[in-house]
Image (cartoon, rainbow, N blue to C red; front, top):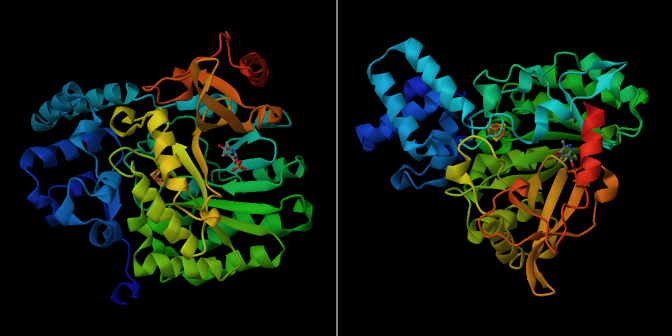
Amino acid sequence: MPQLNPIKIRFYGAKDIDRLPQLQQLSAADRMAIKAVAQVLPFRANNYVVEELIDWENIPDDPIFRLTFPQGEMLSPEHLDKLVWHINHSESEDLHQVVSTIRSHLNPHPAGQVEYNVPTLNGDRVPGIQHKYPETVLIFPTAGQTCHAYCTFCFRWPQFVGMDNIKFATRESGLFQDYLRQHKEVTDVLITGGDPMTMKARHLSLYIEPLLGSDFEHIQTIRIGTKSVAYWPYRFVTDEDADDILRLFERVTLAGKHLAIMGHYDHWKEIETEIAQEAIRRIRSTGAQIRTQAPLIRQINDSSQVWIRMWQEQVRLGCIPYYMFIERDTGAKHYFDVPIIKAWEIFQKAIQKVSGLARTVRGPVMSALPGKVLVDGVAEIFGEKVFVLSFLQGRNPDWCKRPFFARYDDKATWLTELTPALGKQEFFYEHQLKEILEKGQ
Ligand SMILES: *Cc1c(COP(=O)(O)O)cnc(C)c1O
Ligand code: SF4
C-alpha cells in the first residue's frame, strides 16, 4: 500500500497550469482556456487529486479532471475571448476590470444566502452563523473557509476569490456559544465551510469541545461538512495531527453525542483508493457516522451508473447516503446544470438498483429560498402533466411533507423556473414566505 505513506499536501493554482507536466498533452489553446477561466473562478488542485484521482489518459472527459480543472466552456465564448486577449496583452489593470465584470455575470449570491439566514443575538447580527431551520445551526469557522482543492461548480466560489464582502466566517466561537445557549430548540450544529477539516485539530476543537459541556445538553448531534474524505483523506490517516482529529471525534461520541461526518463525494472514483477507504475505517472507528452527499453535475456524474456504483460502494464501507442535490443557480451553471426532469430520471433509475440500505438517500433536492424542495416525480392530474414536489425542510416547518404541484417543464433547472399547476396563481407557501422574509429583514 505505497500511497499510505505520509505525504505532504502540495497545492496547484493558476500559476502552475503551464508547469504541470500532465497538462502538456493539451493544446496551447486549451491550456490557455484553463488559465483564463482560473482568473475568474477559483482554481486549486493538490498532489493527491492530480496524481491519484485524475486519469490523465482520459482528459478532458475524466470526471475528476472536470471536477477540479476549469474548462473553457464554463464561460461564454465572448467572455473567454476577451479574457485571453487581455492575458496576452498583459494590461493587468484592464484584466482586473474584465475579471470583475465577468464575475458579476455569474450570479454570485444565489438563494438569499446572505440576506436572510444570519441570526441576531441581543439585537446584533451574529456573523459566521446561519440559522434557517429551527433545529439546526450552521457555523462557518474563519479558518475553515478554504478547501483542499476547489470544485469547478462550487456555489461558494465568491468567497474563495475574495468577492464576498459579507463575511459568514467568524473567529468568535464564544459568540456562537452564547447564541446556542439562548436557543434550546437547536439539536444539531453543523460545522461547515469551505471545509472545516482544513483546520488544525486544536483549532477545530475550540468549536467542538465546548459543546460537550453541561450548557449544551440540548445539542445532540454535531455534523462536520467536509470534502476532505475525497480530496485529502490523508487528513485522517497520516497528517501530523490525524490522530488528534480522531481523538477529538472520539471525545464527542464518548460524551454521548452523535458525530456525523457529512462527506461530500461526487464520484465513485473518490472512494476507491486505498487511502480513501482507510480514512473511512479510521473515522468510523471513533464511533462517528459518515453520511454522504453530492450535487448532480453534468459532465461529472450525470448518469445513474455513477450513482449506483457510488452508493453501493459507500454502503459497503459503512457510509450512509444522505442527499443528492440539484446544482444551484450560480457560477458556470449553464455548463454544469441538469434539467429537473433529467435529475429525477437519473435518481429514479439509480435508486431502483440499490438495496434499501442505500435508499436512505433523498433526492433530487433543491436547497432553495423557501426550503429544501424534493422532486418526488411526475404525475398526470386531470389530464395535466405535473411535477410532484414537497418540502424536506421549510422556512415554516409546517410546509414539510405537503405535496404540491408545478407545471411539467422539461427545460427547468431550478425551483424559480417552475410555475404552479392546476390553475393555481401561486404555490401554497408563497404568501407566507413573503411575510416571513419581510419580518426577517
Ligand atoms: C440542509 C440544511 C440544513 C440541514 O437540514 P437536514 O434536513 O437536517 O439535513 C440546515 N440548514 C440549512 C441552511 C440547510 O440548507
Ligand atoms: S468542497 Fe465544497 S466548498 Fe469546497 S470547493 Fe468543493 S463544493 Fe466548494
